[in-house]
Length: 326
Image (cartoon, rainbow, N blue to C red; front, side, top):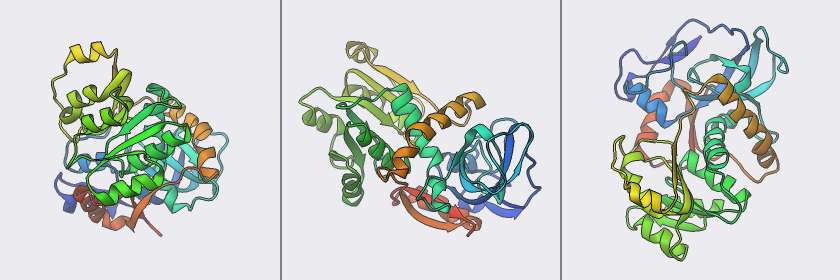
């Protein structure tokens, strides 16, 4: 098969479409013939040499895919050759084939194009696990998501609205904020021109956000705590703004706040399977009912993954960038 490889870390040009050995499904795995994958920030870090795949996993980038089951490995029940699926991966999505633990498979939702289904696994699993399973966002609460026009952000807006939360977003342009409003965002904050702490306080009569989903890390740490409501929950899922920051513990204590930080990639198989099962139970009906949809900015040939990385680095996109083999 062919896959995107990274012979040496570097810029987008470091991604090379080349022939590699076919993967073989092991115990509890299936082999998926990939139709599409999606570009995630973690892929950019891996390309740069900063995010090494876990031991024993595929060396190729790609944390999600959509396609058809080509082979069912030993010990797998409930899936058959030919089933159309999308999957959460530990790596290997930028390829013609990938071996996937059966617990990380999802059926393609009714009404969703197979290729576009690759836009779903990572965002739905990330948002549902952090915002709902960990931070327990409830109806009527105020939810702030940074980067509201990103793949994560566009899904977070829709899912938060589906449970009756009030949604605030940050984004860097009017175009992006307008799109967030179309998805249901109530409070629109241009982070280039406005202070999100002040805007959240003004919009909530001084109380703050009950849940914050943050992709920035260190840069926003203290300001996020300032923006939290009493008993607020801050969920950190990224490090775009750095890895080390100072925290005013007194402020956090005064608010009886909580901070969590998670990734999906390195979690044990059982934990990822539990997240996937929860997404299938709670999110898939919303997608099939037309209440939630994948947001796709553009589709590019998988062999031109370098261009997909450039698009993400330029940050002009809204939603997901897909890499397809169709």
